[in-house]
Image (cartoon, rainbow, N blue to C red; front, side, top):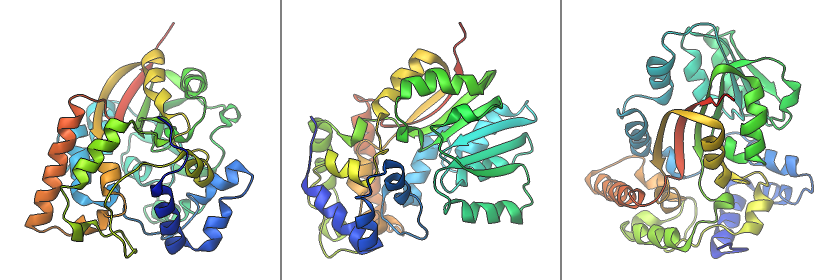
Length: 326
């Protein structure tokens, strides 16, 4: 069921106003979709309280993906799937702050890692890290990744980290454009949200999220930088989604079907988010420094999501794939 506007939209707008100011809100009325999308990423030092900032949540991801809470996906991928290879060329599309790409750059098996993004500010820190480590093989390009025809090189790896869900026409992208850029024996690697398009979660999922929210005591439901409490989740409305970032989850529901049709799975692991992402949004800051009570609450939330995932596909997946050959 699609929702045009919800109470969560008003809370989100007010939160962004407090965090980023009126100029940021007004930028969302730019008629140029690319420029509106840039405003979501082209910023520095913006603090927020989303599920991905919680260390214990990150440990959960590692556990579900690699089997070890202390083993990141980059080292896991290199050690398990790439250790016998050398002189690899990787293209990362929509790289953001390049934190994952920099982790890959630590490994000598890469000859070249090209990071691309439409926003320039996230590259500033990454460029300095690469310079400090004398990693000349990692490069940064400001480029609209929708214009892939400009790229002529064939790559051993094409990588999407939290960026594939920003692309339109996923079937054409994965089925044709990406295949043309990948070597026949190359890998497509994704670490992605692949759930409902435009975050239009079904009623059953919204209901489950609100039940999970009740597991959190009221003091720990006070929203970040706001003097209000999070008592219920309604889900985002379509109008705000499109205004805030026209690219956000624009065709995300097509990711899994396109993968199944065009690629063979080398490795794939879901790491949830169906419940935790919206439950912890705006209140994640309470769980940065843990005590026994907070640890117990997180463990309850993890168990609740695990039970939900037994009957539902994961909204977030990590996967390694090879293109099907005709």
